[in-house]
Length: 259
Image 1 (cartoon, helix red, strand yellow):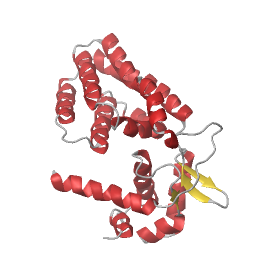
Image 2 (cartoon, rainbow, N blue to C red; image 1 turned 180 degrees about the vertical axis):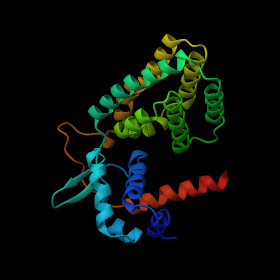
Image 3 (cartoon, rainbow, N blue to C red; image 1 turned 90 degrees about the vertical axis):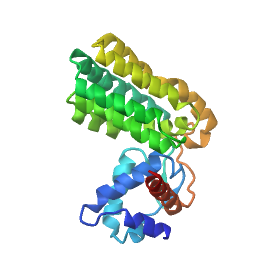
Image 4 (cartoon, helix red, strand yellow; image 1 turned 45 degrees about the vertical axis):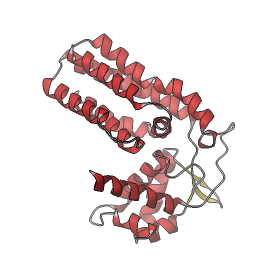
């Protein structure tokens, strides 16, 4: 199957196209399948998916609004570099929201939720291989479960819209640092919630989310081409977004076949 075929086969034409394109492209940017500087064309994506350019344009505008794409006059659209400031801002806001979430959970521990969280911890520990995408999906599920368990699913939706740049760093860090440490932090958090210890739960979530503060300088030094240079100059465009998306979906299908 061609790269164009892989992308178009992922779309459900009975549903709105723009949100699907947005989600697909956003995921590819966040997991760095589409790297900073990759040129991405409305016409290429529209042709690949057999859709008009309008839903593609809508997806591009939304991604640009999140700082994931840079629309450059007379030069086209490219994947943006990671904004150091946006990462720090997202971490600050996420910590404030999730600290309140775990406080709510610790006030009245729910046995069913604790069982579910422990089940998720086992899945995180038993994950085979070092694929950052698989672990990131389990990590996302864990934090979403906390929010939904506290009756704050809407707050998690807000967080998701804020943490795109933070998630890009997370994918880079998973390739450099042991995930066992993150799982241990998840376990400490669940223990604190189960014990009804709000102070310990607060310390656990804050310490967990502050990992990015220690990892970020090292990640930036190891992958300088992924980050905004001084002055925030947009990256120079390079071609190959469709091929990158094809590789992303091929890995997803292979993962599904192995399970």
